Length: 338
Image (cartoon, rainbow, N blue to C red; front, side, top):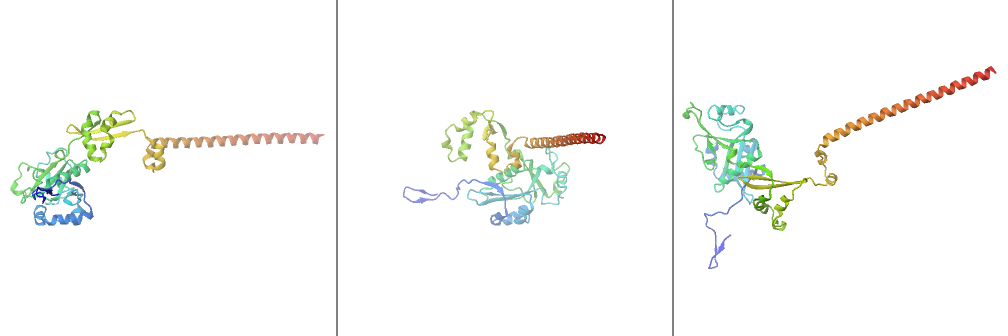
């Protein structure tokens, strides 16, 4: 928006200044293709120098992880893909890590394996947002792939590392005895620890209130209506049925999770299909199995008792009939004798 000067004229902001935008990374989908193509067409010749001949639909389809960055207006301002092996050079997809380790000092990296390593295969962003886009995309990749410890990058030596990759990816040195003149590709690495702050989850304390209030207000437009000490009171009211946890990073509480066991399960069980979740009952499967086994045993016992009663009744009936028959024979014999 422009500002009104003393003369009443509308003065526009200087062209060199841009308003701050919130950049968000998300999975790229087929509907993003037109916008991604439009974004990359502006510098397609430069992108081919950096990444070689590329095809956006094929990148989106064939890479294991593809994401785009959008601004607060929904416009695509960045695009990147990651894969399980490099797409440049003559790497064998099944042995690429061993092959790369024979050239670069990858073996020095802690716990290196194909299961916790991915390769950046394409990246482009609007230059004004490229640093933020790269950071958001890499953080998203590390967040979704929780076991991933590093992202590798392989580029032809004819192209020096360019911004914003420069400064965010560290070069991987060659192994001793490898002649740099015979290596046409450079290897670079971005470690999880450089992008993801280590977070600790612990029980909440009332002292966390000051750190949590800005987080709460940023996510709740009507935060003021909850009262000034709403979070502190919630934390302070902990008991056996109500617990509060905070996530702490860099010595500050960054998030709050409040849990309660004071729930009317019967109402939830009536209104929702909870069978897949054992009706929200702890050890329900074990209990259900036990109840079933007891039911089977009870039914078997009842059937056995019923069969026993029938057999007893039959024996008693036979005995009575036998006794009456014998009595009849005796009486008949007496009559004949008379």
